[in-house]
Length: 271
Image (cartoon, rainbow, N blue to C red; front, side, top):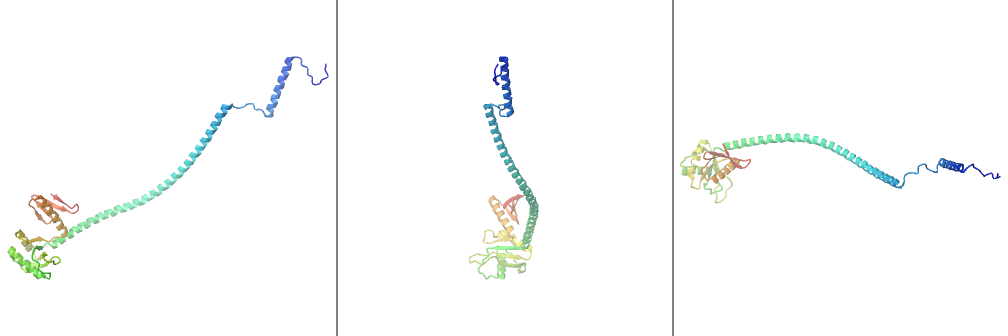
């Protein structure tokens, strides 16, 4: 026996071990209940490193997603602006379409007006040449004074026709006679004669070949466009070195006929 109150006597060593184990268990439970000790100590260092890498990757991914989101917002804004500009361009295009229609209408009207002008010019040129159909121009008749009167010019033409053609002209067969251009010493201005009758003019003109080899010549009076066409036709005929004849604005070389095209300024053969 013993008087020590703290002395515990157990029946066997096994019982002592059982009591110690139970005490340890109780202490463990008390520690768990206190919250200072985790039941799961967590992952080891390698897993923790991988988790940190994943966390860093997620952060980077989030940053990239934010960047993409910003770019998408910028793209949406740009697309909105482009849509607005496209709408404005469509409006301008509609306006231009109206202007284009008006321009095409104006162009068609201009082309029609140009055709009418060409037709009027052709008619005017024809009327001018008809008014000149009784005219002849005499070249080479001496021009001695600047004060030569119409009557003096008329007498020179009458005497010229009688001396060279043996043709007697009645003054009544001549409407008007005068020199062309300003007087220049030592030069002979041509004399233009307007006959009262076309047949008289044709008769005098038919004697023109008799002047070949002399200093005199006779020519018909035409408008400027006709003179220009005849000049090109004669130049073209001379390049062929063959006989030719020229009637009004048509050149005859053998059985072929040629005219001068004012639009292209070339001589063309016609059927």
